[in-house]
Picture 1: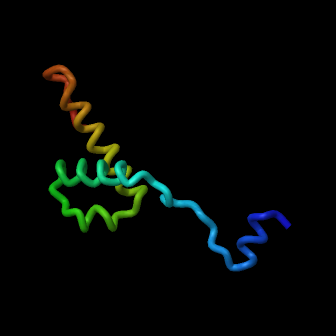
Picture 2 (picture 1 turned 90 degrees about the horizontal axis):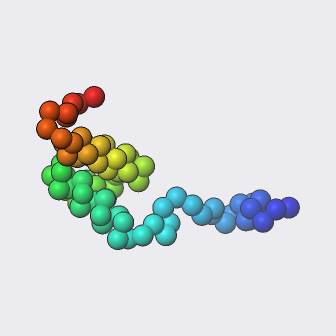
Length: 76
């Protein structure tokens, strides 16, 4: 039996997700979204990790377009 199968079969919980995600990175994401959307810490910290990263990416895209030369900004 593989070590994964043995661990799962014995009731051990598989690891994964954001366990070990750098706390400094989490704070960056929360601060970035709080700054741009004025969402509270409580709203942001309970958000699913993948959702929070998607919002960070969307804000980054908007900021990038705003920083393009004058006259070239368009919302998609």
